[in-house]
Structure formats: C-alpha cells, structure tokens
Image (cartoon, rainbow, N blue to C red; front, side, top):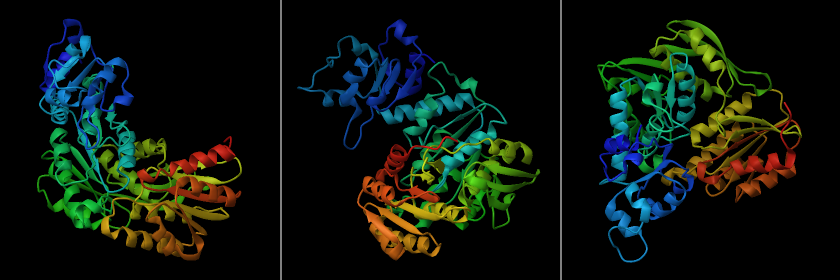
Length: 480
C-alpha cells in the first residue's frame, strides 16, 4: 500500500511529493530505536517519553515518513517553539493527525473492514499468546493466516499487527483469515480492540489473577474479558473454557452466538482424555475429542495448562469445520514460543524448562504441576520470580503459591526479587531467596547437577531469562 493510501486511512493531512506518495513503506514502528530504512514512524506520547522528540532521529535512520501531532511536535523540539519545525528536507515527510493513537486505530479498523475476512480474537489471563500461536497453527489447515507477533495485543499493538498487512510488499489479499491476541489492563480496552477488529470467533481462555491490581477481584477481571464476547459478530462463535466457571458464565451474555466449550473436567464439545507426559519431556500426549471425531495428539508442549491452550485452538478449528485428524496433525507440528515452556537440555545433564516470559499464581502452579508429572529426574527445582500487578493481595498470593509448591513435593525453591520473599517463606525449609536473577543463577551454578529438572518462571519485569542465559553460558547446550 502506498504512503498516500496509508495517510488517507489515518485521516492525515500531508504534503507528500508524487514520488514519496507512491512509495510503499517497509513497515510501521512506534519505537524509534527499531526504525529501519523505509519505515513509517508513529510518534506516540507516553507517560515518560514522547515519540515526537525522536522525529529528527528517525529520519536520519531512514524512516520514509512520520505520523505526528503538529503541536506536540513543536512542544518537544529543543529551543523556543517555531513553525515550521526545522526538519529541513524531511518536513515534507510528516503526516499530520489530531491524535496519533486514534489515527492508527482508525487505519486498522478501515483496513480490516475493507478486507472483510474472518478474524479470531483471543484473550485470557494466562496463556493467550500460546493459544494465539496454536490457533494460527491449527487454522493454517484452513488458509493463509495473519497473526499477532509476540504479544502485540494492546490498542497500539493491534494496529501494528494490521500494519504488517499493508507494508513490506504485503497486501491484505495475501491472507484468508487473521488470528489476533487481545489483552487489557482496564475496562473498555478489549471493547476498543473488538471495535477495530470484530471477531467471527472469540476465544476466552481463562480468568485468573493477572492484572488483579487494576480490577480488585477476579469477577471484575472476568467482566473486562467478557468485552470480547460482547464484540463477536452476530452469528459468530464464542469459544469458552468449560472448566473455568467465570468464563463459562459468559455464554449467557449473548443469545445470537454459537458456543463451543473446551475442557478436561466438565462437559464440553471439545475435550482431552488420556493425558500423559511424553518421554524425555518431548511434550504431552492426549486424545482429542471433537464433535467430528477423535484423534491422538503428541503436543510438543508440556503440561495440562498447554493441553487447555491446545483445546482452545482445536475448538477454533472446529468452528472452521476442521475435523479431529486435521486439527491433531496441525497441533503435532507446533513448537513452543521462546521463553514459554521451552525445554533446554544443558551439556552437564541439567534440563531447564524456560517459562520466563511471564507469570501469575495460577500459571506458576500449572507449570509446577507439569514438572511434578515429568518422570525420570533426580530432583525438581523451581525458580520463581516475583509476580507483578497483584495489588494488595500480592504478598499473600506469593505465600500461598510457595506453600502449594512445597506440598507438591518439589525438592528446592528459589524465590527471585521483591515479593518472592513471601513465596520462599511459604515454601519453608526447602526455599532460598535471591535479590536478583543474577544471584539466582549463581545459586544454581553452585547446586545443580546432572539429572536435575529446573523450572524458571517470573513476571516480565523480573527478567528471569537472564538465569537461563547465564546457565547456557556456563554449561553450554547439549547437542541433540
């Protein structure tokens, strides 16, 4: 798509030369540090940093254009405000809008409305990125899938995902359907996302304690998540977790939707039975049960929590008329996303489960259960980083997690940073505490030995992946 067409989608005023107007950008970015030649830079105002102050810098890096608010651009330049801003030859590359966030959201909504093909929207307190990746994997049997990268699931991230459909020599017609992750930290955020990208199928994976700091109770978290169900197109399908009462209750919100339930314990259209850990931690076996038949799945991901994620993706496949064999074949070919349950075998015989991307209490306990169920290891060690955004209940939740981990029979626990002191207290005599991930890595270097299985998990801000990096650096990765 040309730069002028993108400007029109954003409702931008511009004074582009004919050559620049006809130029097709290579991408869209909001981080000035990530700008590459041919990118469009979107100058977003932040709490601490305003993107407008980097406009000169991004043009020096080769940005083809910048979407800006003119008065904010003036306010962030050095020296007294003046117009036009001294950008020299770059002044003609500015696309002026009233609000940069609203402009790219409008762009995304217009692109998707014109495209008018099926969208799968995904939310949940834990595992939504894995559900998104598995759903895209399953639906690849149905057609060409465009999906969110990483966890670009916010009112900024979703437009960037849509931006990848119209830049870099890519066009919306290249895709048959889209799988989009939708996150939130406040009421109304998912509502804005489904307004931009109305789903044909909406998946709610679970309601946990993630972001409870902002909502106070799980019931309020559920209310915010339910905005996804509210936004599904009439006649579409809600995919709901039958084993999560707060999620299952969302089927009562609409009378004009199809409902597909997935689960392990309760009645559901899409179920799993005969769940078992595969030898050498190669993943999890289960029998997938759907209205269109049954099939064995060898999922290359560990644990019952990932079986739930796979069932959510399978239910999306059922909504698109895939049978059990087709879904199983796609799930068998899946791969863990980086830092989301990756199994790393070190050269000294220690095995790591790198689940360091994020954490919350239910997700931590699910990952520990997967560790306990894995046969053939001398010791099982849990390295649990502080879990953020838990509000006033944080210390108590950490303590209860530590106690639950100790009750599961784990041999050693290391709490890392902040409130993880309470987790270590809950775990009792088998626990230690480290102020930093670097200190935790040194503890493991002193104590780990061949035959140990180590789970490493923590909230994003704790950076527990540094522990994995240090152990790899010291001992190396096994050649297999």
